[in-house]
Image (cartoon, rainbow, N blue to C red):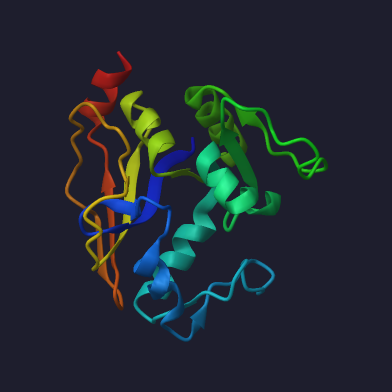
Length: 206
């Protein structure tokens, strides 16, 4: 069964963008090394990300494990749905209360869902035994509240925004994480990965 991993690059005070959706220096570490992120065909993915030697093995392994990505409508609009080709994985699914834009990549199998639980269920089916990457923010928070998230992955950048778009969105209740099982220092980034406590997931789902 697929593992659902909530993920984003985040500031040390918990924001994935400022109030104007500007990521500022959050993504600078993607370009401060010499090692490209490559796909199965040894081609660079989307933009020429070039990572440092400590981040590269972790990021390429994580991206390579992704089978499906779930994003919200806000991120879809900002990225134009990555032109129907997500940075990692074979499948993109979108949570939105508005329909797919008319004429947007009509050949692409990118389903839209009004319910986050339905989107995650379909993403699990499509991912098989691989990872479902769930974009952090409002949609990630909805899935977390429903007990649908298995792990939290954060690439923490040493910058303080003060305000902006929260990694955990409008979380209204406490959620317990295990100790991080990935703690990896890169160049201007700290990679962290936590499992959600099983007792927390089961109590939410009941």
